[in-house]
Image: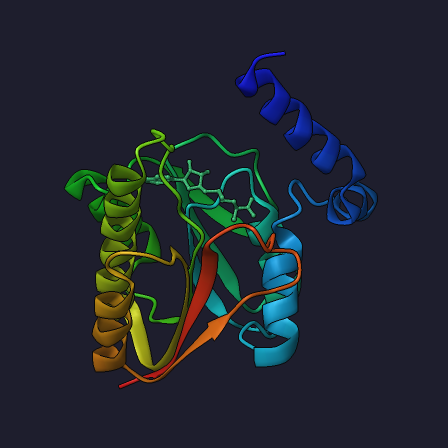
Length: 206
Ligand SMILES: C[S@@+](CC[C@H](N)C(=O)[O-])C[C@H]1O[C@@H](n2cnc3c(N)ncnc32)[C@H](O)[C@@H]1O
């Protein structure tokens, strides 16, 4: 068996046996990623009834689903992804590439000057397999998300972002510290140990 088909078989086995995959199917979430957000939220209470938030890199939509349930009818979720996303009740979605100015402008007009309590970003580029390129692409998206958070969060607002540890990580933490009074790391149980992904939480925008 080729290395590639061995590793995709291993992935499939892991996926089929994964506790969070089963739980997501049972609970009606579109992805197991929902439990990463829910676990972080359990600890940090970022999303409450009435919270207005932006979900960057939202497809297939499990974070948006979980967030929309938590914010209720007095809050709102604005979501964006380069891929299409099936509608979620209580979520305004636009499809587009966050790196494009026209897409950002469209998203900003959707917000209609509503100050945000929270920005959550789970964006990850399509992996090319070249670690250096992938890391650079990922941090570029994270930098754009941080700029967006800096411009649209109300004072005291929070920012949760997925990053991949490696080159650029320390600089990114330092950039976050300029904008938020506290920056902490979160590695929820649903995030696989072997993955270098980690979530950074900027609290209390200056
Ligand atoms: C890990 S998935 C997000 C999963 C989502 N949080 C959920 O719970 O369903 C990462 C998403 O980032 C999106 N993405 C990557 N690059 C993007 C870009 N330039 N603009 C907008 N979305 C992007 C991908 O299309 C993908 O849907």
